[in-house]
Amino acid sequence: MLSDIPVSTDDRVLIDFRTADDAGVYRWESGPALVQTVDFFTPIVDDPYIYGQIAAANSVSDIYAMGGRPLTALAIAGFPADGLEPGTIREIFRGGFDKLREAGVALLGGHTVQDREIKFGYAVTGSIDPARVLSNAGARAGDVLFLTKPLGTGIVGTAIKFDRADPGLMEAAIRSMRTLNRAAAEALLSLPPGVVHACTDVTGFGLIGHATEMAVASGVTLEIAAGKVPLFSGVHDLARQNRSGGMTSNEEHYAAGASVAAGVDEDLLSLLYDPQTSGGLLISAGADWSDHLVSVMEKAGVRASAIGRARSQNGGVRVRIMV
Image (tube, rainbow, N blue to C red):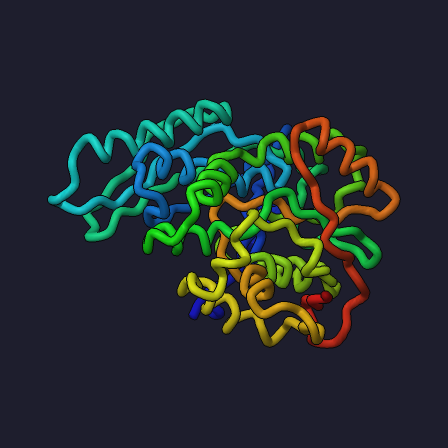
């Protein structure tokens, strides 16, 4: 639908929509560049304050995934004209504001419209060193792939709607979604330049979807060991009964470029397509620095799980899922 939209010819645009990256980057005449993104979605939890916090954490995540520092935000919201208590709206905004404040982001204002379904999020602007941009387009053959948060928030969100989620699992998923990717991003930037070759956050397209985009942008094939991918405890048992529409869409869109080894569990494969909210960072880094990267992450309070490798491009296979 958008294939005939012309691309920018402004040489100050360093990254735009062409590589399906997390945010756009625009170079100023001097100093740091601008990094900009926008994201919003419908409620995935019942508590309005927590929903606001998750929406804010999810929105600023794209800035962290690029290696930038979020600075300002504009709220974007849609609320029904009636049937929603003013206090509920207030709690959504308060949750978002508190999370932005935790991230050191200034809320400048925003825009709301009437909508039959609640929607909330932010447009976020940050600063970034043009020489240290963490694009999704730099993965190299031989790199080790890391993931910094467990998968399963989409399945948990669906289970919550039908009262099928175990309280412990629900609490773990909500805690993860409320957690900023700030510590992980700062840990990556503390490494020497050139150690991290590519980075993206895993959100609505699921692990396979975002890995596919990284593979296409980088000209490699990403090999993922399904058994090494971190999952929320107990979420595997919910996978079959709590497939979301987003999971089905992701599978329809990305399965053609995915090669799945015999023996990969069907429900585990579903989790790799599961759309995530405020998910972790998918990192492609030089193999010689793997142990050091894990150590730096641990010191920052982040668990970075090695889940695979980047390989030389193999025909039309974008992502290879191994047992």
